[in-house]
Image (cartoon, rainbow over all chains, first blue to last red):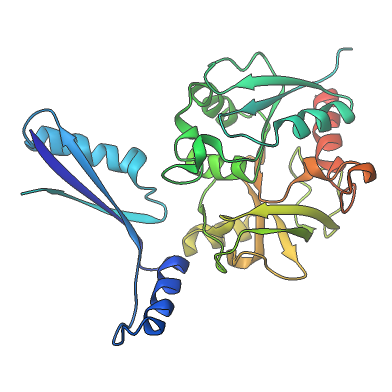
Length: 81
Length: 227
């Protein structure tokens, strides 16, 4: 049993309107010193077996096919401790 | 000769299928209901992908709908030349299915926008817009939270250079779309997607801002009858 994390973030050149709204809200709440916020998605994928190379390759395929829209988003795949 | 048959797709969460079907009938065609879970196009001559919130817009708008059993039939048929029009959520589904380039993202102002919107027809070279005049100004309802069209620079300049920007917002950009893009088509021109709703602009009786939506349906029906 292993858990694999897929982080999905908008590509840097894509305007993140939600992240900007969060960044604008922070000073009002008393949090200073934040120059920018970008919002993304995190998926925790529970595997039946170990996170070996074959399983990770499958998760990458999942990410490419469904979890991320690679037209606008990048993703990273990591194995949870 | 029997009426041209236009399929209207219903996913769980689709809202505008009844208006779309009515618009097809209004223009003199036969509206054929297509069900997302049924991989059968029922021999239709064209397909309308209506708006709504298919699959609850979970993950991303259109991301799950694109894998519906019906789409397994629709995607190759559209690539082979079947005329397909996607409005609003239908446009989002066409982009997620990679039948159209780019993507639709959260409106730049973050607000859901529901209003009557000026739209300029930029191309009449598609089977869905041939009844319009180039440069014609339409007023159509828009109602969406995720309508900001984005694409990388190469895609955008290719769209512009090849006349594949079919509609542009006029009198103000409601959602921050790049180049004021309201609708685009694929290279062959048979697949068109746009955020505004022609199926809601059919008759004065319903309080529609115009009857400009009729042109989409008369365009496709003429095309099919003459085919």
